[in-house]
Image 1 (tube, rainbow, N blue to C red):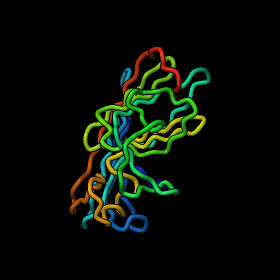
Image 2: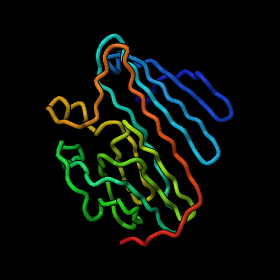
Image 3: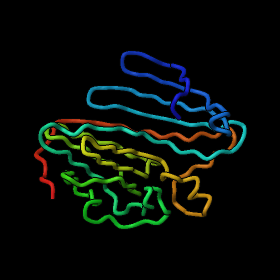
Image 4: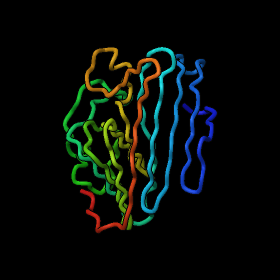
Length: 208
């Protein structure tokens, strides 16, 4: 949720931890959320959690990073997933899965070239990669980060690790299995963690 008041619980040269109450006028279940970011040489450690208040509530977590394309060369994106979600024309998931094929197949970390994606990858393996001509970024995807949205507009790319599918509450309500949606009891907590690590790049493939 945007526009929330975050309390700074920890802040030093390399770490910040924030928390906030979820206001009932914007989220009728109440509860609290928190996040932590810790920077070290060659890596960024991220964690987030959401805690239910006095009543059960649906919950999911994720990050929405946007990476710029290089001025020279291309970006390569690798996602070890054999399936994407079928989408309606408005890009909302239908609940069905489809095999990756052609432009949506990122298992060999291809150069993006002119492919334009806005897809939801499921069971996306243990890591995703984003590679510039001189830098490789690895995004760890430990459980419960089993969903990855990849969006490739002309000037950048979004690689978004998530604990649940987009529109998971509505799909869950329809009886669709495997969305990743958590249903927390009073006082229960959902936590997700990821480490992003980077190092020198390697020679890239050309776009196919």
